Amino acid sequence: MAVYKRTYRGYSGAITPTWSRFLVLYRFSRRGVFKSKFQTAFLVLCFFFPLLCLLGIYANDHLSAFAFLGPREAPLFAIDGKYFFIYTLVQGALAFILTSFIGPGLVSPDLANGALTLYLCRPLSRTEYVAGKMAVLCIVLSWITWIPGLVLFFVQASLSGWQWMVDNLFIASGLLLGAFIWIAVLSLLSLALSAWVKWRIAAGALLLGTLFIGAGFGQAVNAVLRTKQGYLIDVGHLISVIWGDLFRQEANADFPVSEAWVGLLAFSGVCLLLLMRKVRANEVIR
Amino acid sequence: MDQVNETSTVLPSVAGTAPPVSAPAPPPVIELRGLSVRLGNREVLRDLTCSFTGRTIGLLGPNGAGKSTLINTLLGFWRPSAGSAYVFGSDIRTHAKSIRSLIGYMPENDAFISKMSAVAFIRLMAELSGLPSEMALERAHEALFYVGLGEARYRKLGTYSLGMKQLAKLAQAIAHGPKLLILDEPTNGLDPPARQRMIRLIREMHESREMHIVLCSHLLRDVEEVCEEVVILKEGRVVHYSNLNDERRSNRRFLELELQGDTANFIPAIEKLGCECAPGALNRLKVVLAEGVEIPDIYRIASSQNIQLRRLNFRRDTLEDIFLKAMENGNGSL
Image: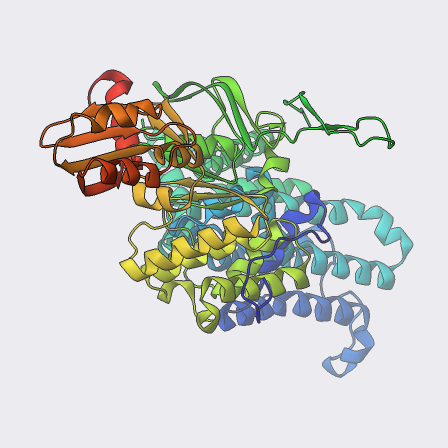
């Protein structure tokens, strides 16, 4: 099939391993994400708060640099579970907003014009397709959540010493586990919504709506029925309860942690079910 | 892989050389063994059993006959409810992925990413089929030049016309050099020149002998122009299988004559050659030529009996005839 000959020729060269095909999807989808200057700018903005936290940690350990403000014995603030809980809340919110920009553009273009058939007629399973698309969100969201979080943790550990690190290992595990859960929930939610609402902008809006409408509806249920079960449909509250538990904070102890886990798992399960129903080469018309 | 064809071909031995070499015959391109597919409550394919070995296979049938379902089943999109199908000897139930790596598929419906350039899209598809990145890019350019979209390869697919989109779909199907190319209604919506170009490309690929082609269409002319074998489906069943090459060869023996003059001695003279004759109205005569009898023999007899041959046609069963007959035989109604 040489260009100059314009005749067909077969291919008998090297073939990449089958397991690595989902990485092709990741690579192409990631390129699409960073074609948007707005998304790239927002991603850069997401590093602002971790940088601020880093400065906070540094300043807290170098009080002598602030001698001009007057003598000070105690640290400016405590670098503890609460500090990293607040960090996780802020970065989690930013991760949600970033997902609402990136997520809908991952699956909906494939479904809008039937390209999914072309993916799945190749040696690529539906699971690998979803994995390839999720990998984009997982990696991008990792850049702004647990990776800078762990950097902050280790900077603080290097400044405060080995004992601080041993005493606060729950923070590192909380950063990792908390981010993993949130990234998984966001990825599944955004992919499921973009699979069902093929219009990218509408899918983004719906993603934002899911959080806010869920929160509002949950509060209404709580108020009307005088219960706390309304939180089960408030994904934001569920994750903050789990984060609070991971970082040993009592602030969100108004709802049982075990129920928050169940609620979040059920929510993720529904998203996965919705996603897999749509990620098919063909639809059965009964 | 489950090899389904266990027969072997014995090559002729040459005196004084090694003993006969037994080479296994290649498995059929597609073999269906009692294949049934149920979608919802409807049985779309019912107990299909046949095997194809030709280079270009036509899949014909009216709308709703199950052509696309059969293709989707071969690609592993639907699971058979009974029986199975084999592609190059591999069972679609157990080797769906390895089968897909051998197939290039051009679907009937739109299938593209509108904001992607043609070259990027085809490169992506080639990489998903297993080509290394640089090779996929090279083959994407080549495939686009081959189908005639070379100059438009950097344009976004959303800006393509219907004909260009069809060609782009063909390019993505061949970029990775498949062994089996499945084309589902490739000439749908094309104007006559574009259709001609598509048929020419299919015929060229057929002649390259690098791949087998399954052409699914309800346009009989398209199938007739490029296919060697034809299977006709109706209501999920195979109602006719035909090897078009054999049909064409046998059709060469049927003649339709229009005569002028006294034919009383002409018919016995023709029959004496071993031919079968069937006189019709208006001095017409249908003749089935015997082996070894050629047209000049007819001329010679007509000339000796002073009979004018006003018309001589090969009576050829067109694919349309075959198709209509198959539809009638299916259950007696069209």
